[in-house]
Image 1 (cartoon, rainbow, N blue to C red):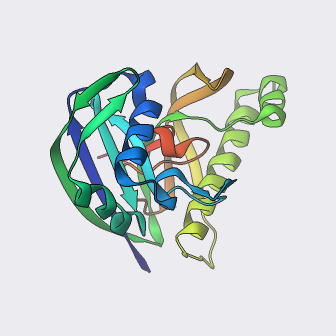
Image 2 (cartoon, rainbow, N blue to C red):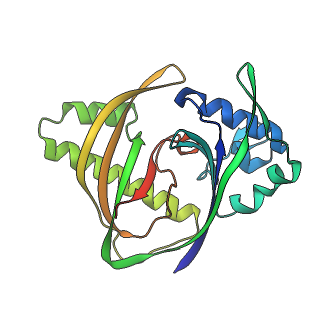
Amino acid sequence: MQQIKTLIVKFSPELAKHEVPLFRGAVIAASGGGTLFHNHVGHNYRYSYPLIQYKRIGKCPTIVCVGAGVESIGELFSNGNFSFEIGERTVEMEIVSIKANKTNVQLWNSNFHYSLTNWLPLNSENYKKYMQSELMTEKIALLENILKGNILSFLKSMGVFIEDELTCSITRISSSHIERYKNLSLMAFNLEFSTNVSLPHLIGLGKNASLGFGVVRECR
């Protein structure tokens, strides 16, 4: 068993969906640009799970810190300046809430049920496989394998190593739609799944998890 710390910091006023990357840039500038804020080491990308994630939760700009990201967020708080440059406008932001959590991340004998919103599972190769699959069962099996890989990647980055089999089943696909990101059209999914591993609230899974894609919520 390993306890994973998370810290969820929600700000006001509300933010438009397309402004999340701008919010990220503003926080990086205000914090002094530590490694975990932008997930780069020098000029190179840090190929590991993002420990500081920028999201829009209930229309509010939100930072989700995971693991070592919880300590790093102090770089932003010590500055105390939440006058953020969002595009061409200056926004005076205030902290609405701060919630600290600890999650026992491990495999269990029973399943947990989660929702997953704006999940981006498909690269160009998997997109072709998905579109060429005639049966919905084949499409779901492909998505389940990708989701399982996303979860295992998260666990590995958190230093959680499991000996038994991780199970992952998509129980419902609510919708799919196209998201535009860096001039690319990407297929995004809103769905529900069950798995025998416990996951922290509001973490991201899959591509662009640092920018509010693939948000995990426990279904109660």
